[in-house]
Length: 302
Image (cartoon, rainbow, N blue to C red; front, top):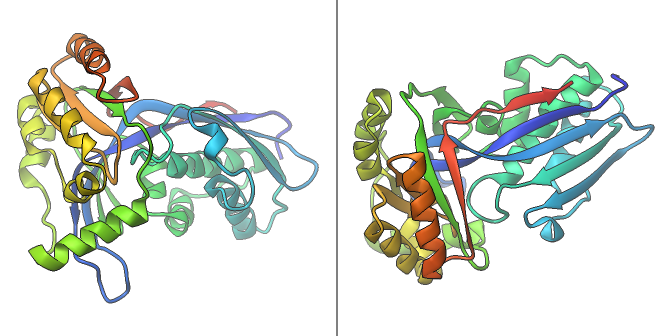
């Protein structure tokens, strides 16, 4: 074990496209999604410990998060230790900037950061394939969060293929009052699907082309989220947020993942600053953030 801390920064994600199949016989939904990491980072610090796994959290929404074995970061540390047959001894600290219960995979990011940080701290030298296998056991978004960037996700989201992306994209992220439970959003999706009876999702070829060519306007037009109608059904106030963002000039707007965070694509950083100020002044969200993508997971200190 190293005798000094390992610090890892892990970005939030948005789903530029999220296609969700009807509930399968195994009680899971098959997904086709385009993950895109953006520059809102949680920081995971792993320090040597004489015994056990401890966790402290500060920052965005910290008071709502458990610090016991139910936290995904603690599960990640113990899973890695078990895999390598080492004692799970680490003091974890997470500084949160990714919104909690906002559909931006903050918990998954923390788990991914913990896997990387503990692997360095314990000098277990896991291969990329090992870390990805462990990540998939923890949750659908954790595998993507190991790397960041932009990627196509399939299966339950854990099968990852890198996507060619040209240029940088500027986002305004509107945080809603309150949260949405992901299981409740999927239940509402299932209820609505019983009426709509839509088929399996398809790979969003036009969106992939827009990313490859760096066409922001086309990207904005191709943003999609099959869970958005369910999120809007459970939290109708999000409709107003999306409408005002579009009226203020966003090139694209959608609910992020299972919500309730809304994301808006801007033409440039300056446009994102102006859009964020206008959205904040309109009183249709709790607060706003500005971010750029694609962002990557990075070891800051080891």
